[in-house]
Image 1 (cartoon, rainbow, N blue to C red):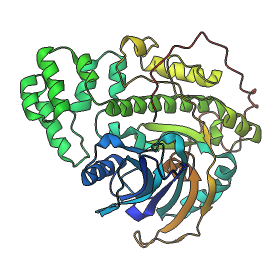
Image 2 (cartoon, one colour):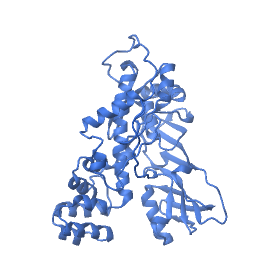
Image 3 (cartoon, helix red, strand yellow):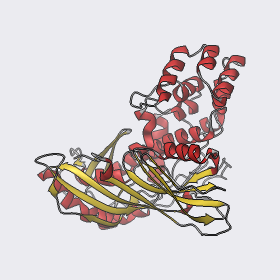
Image 4 (cartoon, rainbow, N blue to C red):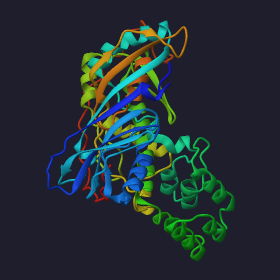
Length: 424
């Protein structure tokens, strides 16, 4: 099975609710891009329009690999422009900028290639299940670019008080996969790490100059240096680790909820996780209603079984709740947010299979569907074609485990602490 074999194989269109106002200060645009991620596209638009990057807002990040359409707002400026792999079209004005709260989700058209008979049979079996019972809403590889670029999880270093490791991961770890000029700079900084004058001379720009001047003045204050990094950069890494914790907790939770003979395993760059081939009707309803929020130290924790799983994940990582306060860095403060364990796609349609012109002797299909904001189309595809688990506590044909009791409400906790609030 192959995904994204060609850019046009992966098409995304974002849906947005915004109120048009001809007197509004925010100019709403449709941005179409190919072979660019959202942040690269925004930088190019800002340079072309000669506007500050902070005047451009968007609802969500879209992947580099594919043809994507999304909405952006530019404060005070209209842009109509077509460049390499990028098109910006003005559509109207509004009193409010584009934010994630306006997003209704995304519609996808995805070509899946290099399919054999076994994969086509699996697809035929699983489409009805996903249409009725959905799939496990794990974060997928797009969320964990920090692993692909060799940084690991800087947020974990922060929580453990290893500020030097966190800073070095963020600013001086060259990516083994990226091809941008940023890689050369990070190689130089990594080589010169600890020689702050040399680092300052190598790195240009106000952020770098402030950062390395701070280390020249305070050579061991890595925590203070982290405070000087851009908030958005820190937020992205904080959310990446929060998402990883959620994935791990859901995996543990589902292992206790789903009999082994009904399990499949979906694989990501951050690990492989348990999901289901098919659920009993009552179990599907329980999981769909389960409260499984993203973790924050002052949160309520969700369902007891999920809360226990999250606590186990935290213990395995040697992270206690007080780490979030003792080692707090601005921009790396987490808040509890609801996240559905189960996602049911809208209008899932699968074409008849056809010969795959890019992979002789194999077949291709096209999938069309819609997903809510925050759900991953690649994760749906992985569920459709995932391998069954090797049974460890049951096997096909064995009797199902007794029905589990209904999920119980969480016990009340103490008063919630206030945390910095950030929009995604």
